[in-house]
Structures are given as structure tokens and as C-alpha cells.
Amino acid sequence: MSIARIHSPARNAMQSGQGRTDEWIFEWAPSEPKRIDPLTGWYGSGDTNRQVQLRFDTLEQAEAYAKSKGIPYEVERRRQVPALRPKSYADNFRTDRLVNWTH
View 1 (tube, rainbow, N blue to C red):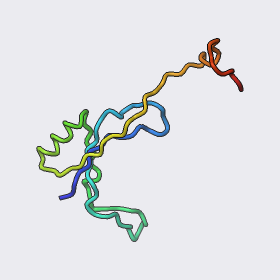
View 2 (tube, one colour):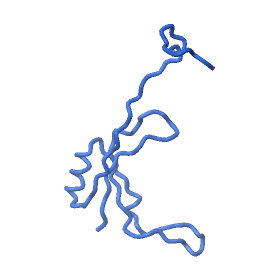
View 3 (cartoon, rainbow, N blue to C red):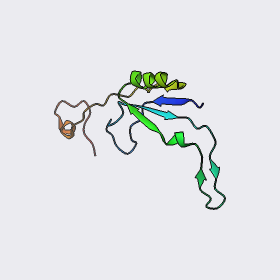
View 4 (tube, rainbow, N blue to C red):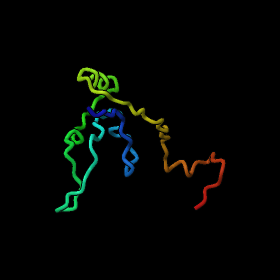
């Protein structure tokens, strides 16, 4: 039986928001390597578990699911996310700025 991976997704590199980063994803590790189809040249595999991706609200829910089904798993902890500081265009023109505004 292959092992499962539980992780929290990173934010989308194309957006600055934090959407969908507070959930946990349960997915299977590959149990067989991909192979090239001789006719089309495309990569494929007979491993259908790689298509399954379950989403949970908390890490505890994902771990409880794996334990209830008897699935070995490993948890990839989320990295520290830097806090977003709100910025305002008007701050460029404050009178109490320490540094002069330049172009």
C-alpha cells in the first residue's frame, strides 16, 4: 500500500491574496512511475489513486480520515507565512515622512 501525503497548499504565485491556503489536502504518493506511451508519446500511469485529492478544513480532520481508513501518511507542515502590511498610496505624500519622496 502506498503512503499518503497531507499538506497545506501554497498561495497562488500569480495573486497576492491568501485564498484557499487555510485548508489541508490529502493526496496519494505515486505507487508506480509514469511511463511513455509508445503510440502518442504522452506520459501515463496505471496509478488511479494519484487522481484523488481530498480537502479538509483542519489537519486533525485529515489525520482522523487516514487513521480511520488505516492509510499510512506523512504530514508536510506549512511554512511560516509573512504577515501582510496594508499599504496606502496616500502614505507617499504624508508630511511626517522621514525620507523625501522621489520618483
